[in-house]
Each structure stands twice: as structure tokens, then as C-alpha cells.
Length: 246
Image (cartoon, rainbow, N blue to C red; front, side):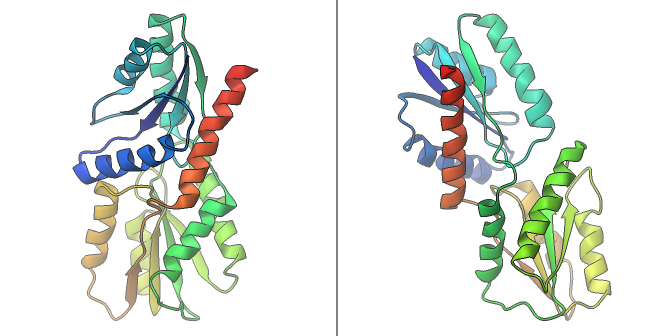
């Protein structure tokens, strides 16, 4: 019997956990599988092992482990596989298929364009756009964000777009924002490449609130509960079914 285990990041912020869980519930309704569980990598229960055990206890003999992650980084390459291995050793009769993060997709980069448009502010000729990523020590993160920037640039040839990060990579969000202010851009659009709310989004907002300048610093909405994200995650789940059946 097939089961699906969605692995979200986890957060100290209750709203972030609820938002992630609610999003996953929307996707579950689109998957024709009776056994589906949500778990979290850190800070929140159930953890991966608890979620895995719940599926096994319900009779799952094939489990699709789905990382609810935007990009490939340490959690995808190290943390989740380590947990999977531990559970496979505990339940050797269970076949596991490991899904992929959403990754770089033109339709997801297009959400950034929508988030800018939703501000109802037309970018001026000297506007600056800061795409803010979570950041990672894995070099793939910077490659992916660079591609996302290129995809957004393709539909906004006149815009000055830069990628910055909240951790591990450079330039930092704080450095990029200060630089944009110093250069006198009349508008600075801050576009978080974040799926759900949480401490990082709050940090972005607090940093912006700390500025008292003539520049218009415009904080765009996070990716959030967008139908394209739902479709993308649904497809990642269905891909693992094909892997199991091979």
C-alpha cells in the first residue's frame, strides 16, 4: 500500500507551521492516495521518523518522501536522506521513493512578477529589485537563484535586478538594501523568494522598517499559497509514483 510523507521545514512561528500544513492539505486533496502524512525537519512535531512510523502503522509498504522545499540545499542532500536511511533500516520491508524540491521553474519565477504587480506600483526607470533568498552553503542555491533572476529579467529587460541572501551567501540582504539606498534608487522592490511566513520574513520587514528615507522601499508578498506552487508540488508527488512503479 502506498503512502506519501510530506517533509516541511518547521518553524518556531506557529503561523508558519499552520500555513505550511494548510498548504500541504490542499495538495493532499489532489492526490489519489489514502495514506498521507505531514512532518517537519526541525522545531515542530511530528518529525520525519514519527511521520514515517505513522504511515507504516497504517499499512504503508511504499512511501514517497516529498521535500516541501523550493530549492536543493543541505536539507535535501543531507538531512532528509539521513533520516530516510535510518527509517529504512528500521523498516526494511518498506520501499521508499525520494522526491525532488520544486527547483527552478519559469512558472514559479513568474510568481515574483505577480508579486511586484500586486503592489500596484509601476517600477520607475531607476527602480531596483532585490530578490531575497534564504541562502545556503551549498553552491547550487546561488546557481538556482541566479537562474531565477535571469528568468525574471527576461520579462523585465529594463529593471535592475539583484539577488541577495538572508544567510550563508553574499551579498547579504542588509548589504544589498543599504547599497540600493545609498545609490539613491527612487524605488526598491524587495521580493522574498520564501514559501511561507516565519522568522526570516519578519526579519526582512523589520529591517525595512528601520529605514527612514525618501526612497520607496516596497516589500512584496512571499510566494505563499499560489496555485502554481500547488501544481508544482502535486507533480513532484506524482513523479515518485512513477519511480516506485519502475
